[in-house]
Image (tube, rainbow, N blue to C red):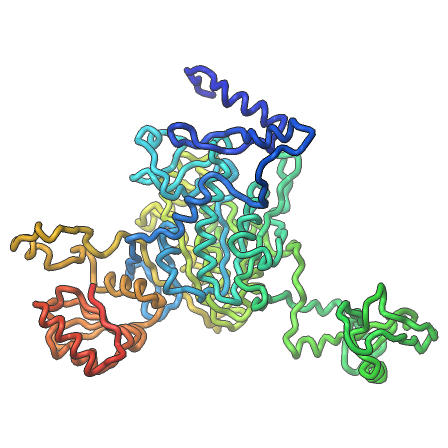
Length: 635
């Protein structure tokens, strides 16, 4: 039952609705006097719609919305955050190259800009579809306590992370566009030159996403819009049952892109003439590129008919090569020798070269969301813990196209963890090395359950009950990690000889490791100086500090490291000397010399590791003498 509004009608907004019914292209979004967004009228467009002549004014081809500039600023704004390692939640911490990162993906992407700049082969994301019922990330939009209390919203304790985006919201499209725009800006930086990104989306924002993608990646780097049949059953919710979604594909650099294909279908190959080279199929001999002696008649020896390239095109080969191919029985004039010439394409030769079949833009045989649900239920003893997850086969197909030979795969809307399972399965089945980075916001399932529909609530309650059985927090990230572990176990059970990386390092987004306290020079007293001996927060460990240094110095977060005690001090060596760190207090000169003699690329200490300024200066002199190429820093 609807609740009474108990207030007068908003006449202005009602008028906007009336105009929108007549002229939908005249409705836009604008801020009111309080800075809130609401539906508004583009009066210049309305004047043009009511005029029979061109209205004066500047025109430009552009795609914009309220908040676009702010989203660009937000993507570029630095943050004082870090990623803290969580060894107890990790699997094979010392050997794995996979990462599972818990936190807001916008902030995580900012922190990964240096460490993974140009290193990601493939990104797949399945962002919120903006259906009117989804929660979307509400970057840096502060709300009042009154708004926080409104059950239509979903925010964190500071009131600034997420909200329920209904189609009555004045900023329905603008917020979604801002959310995805800033993240794609940062994601593009992480892609390698031959990298590719797949973005799943449905009908409501596919047009906007295409415009944003063209702007962020460049229109020339658009690869395709795949149509994936995500369901087979018919829904009666709308006039047409929505049975597909759109994975949009963009490359970092189209000229460098190496796109994989589908396996060759041997059923397309025949051998009616008993060719000793085996089964073949016929492919055209003409092309549209000019050059050389490539327009000439080719005579069918059986019918005597001469054939020229069709429609002003050219033959792919010059006369001499064509004659050699005909003599070698590699040219056939149709299956019955009564038509134009075509070239035999042999199955064996294609398989020997590792050829692939060019994929279709329509995917009908890559699983459905129903299959995705079944896959999770099979891992969790028949329990339904996620609604409408992508199928593993679908993501494996995208990996087959985007990272066929392996590499680093990323999903920063990781959700149930399907991409991680798909990466492990693809690696085990194809013998390639695939590493992954999963990023997921630790959404509170209790809060989501309170606001969900009855069907979604049942699934969420199942998930909460499952986590209770494990005594785990009620977070989607806990479910996702459990899914990855169970998937890895099942792969080993199904194929004991499979080799793949079945672990992951867990990292959690948190505030900076450093104390956020600043004083003017005149404020310092002897007592204050003693209090400031450590500029590091008291709950932070050596490992926290080490990974904070890796992020600042742009080192990958999945490499091996060792820790050892030298003259009473703990010394950490990352990736055999990419960085050596010691965060102890009063580090003796013997330890400094030992580290310097190893000539690491980088060395780092805490600011209070040295009792006095002269000692700190002496450290610099030691490195100048023993390791002049080492970059030395303190935190």
